[in-house]
Length: 351
Image (cartoon, rainbow, N blue to C red):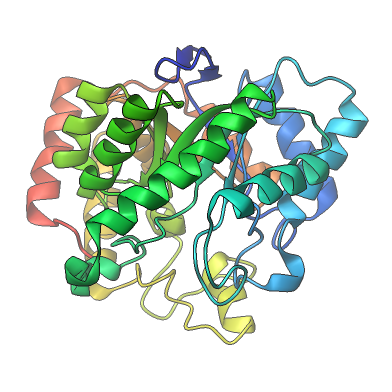
């Protein structure tokens, strides 16, 4: 597994990351520990988590459980120096932290995450979504930034960067990043940090897959020119790109099925639309014609984008993880990438 540097932070991580979003809900502690062991065996030493996990659905009473699972695994494993761990502070929302984050909240949240993770340092600390709102999570269809106040946003950035700077100097975190951010927001965070002499944002964790390529334009340009690595979450579109879902098909124990069990719509956070299912079928047919596995093709495509990117691979169980790991040596040819580009033109942003 290759390693890459996150901006100017000095933090080196593997170019594939293990996501732990299912840990504590769909994935129990035994399987979670087995997955982390298997990932390390395969050379993946970069783990991503968040204080709000587990999801499906998000519940205040289970917040932090995924971090606790990692902490338990770390205590059993007995070593930490060969790993890189990323976590996040949650933004505003009714289920965990209604009023979002500021310098005081960030300081408290870092200490709480360190305690749950049973470690003394977090390698990458991320802001899960912007305080001012985001167009992520299918909010792009009705996104309205007209109520934002630029002066308040800049003041908020200064406040948060002050706390993050203190945490870096205290040795609690090594690098900082964003999540579900825009091109404007990313550049402003960088500008404010440079003016303050504070740590620079070196990563941005946004959704990216064959089906969701909003990153390809303005944010890709920011990523290249400002040396900000994309941590691509949901590179399999929350499981859609496994081909296991259909208009009336929700396999047992799948993310959609679990969501329905908890009273949700079971539409994978708005991703499961008729157009999306049509697009998946097209990619599935193309993969078969090229002699490729759709799941492995989707991950390989993400890794070969023309901007710095690390896919976050996640699995409900270790068998799924094994299937993902088996395809990590796949490199798509120019002809295969052209075939994918043609399909993207036919099926742009299908959800």
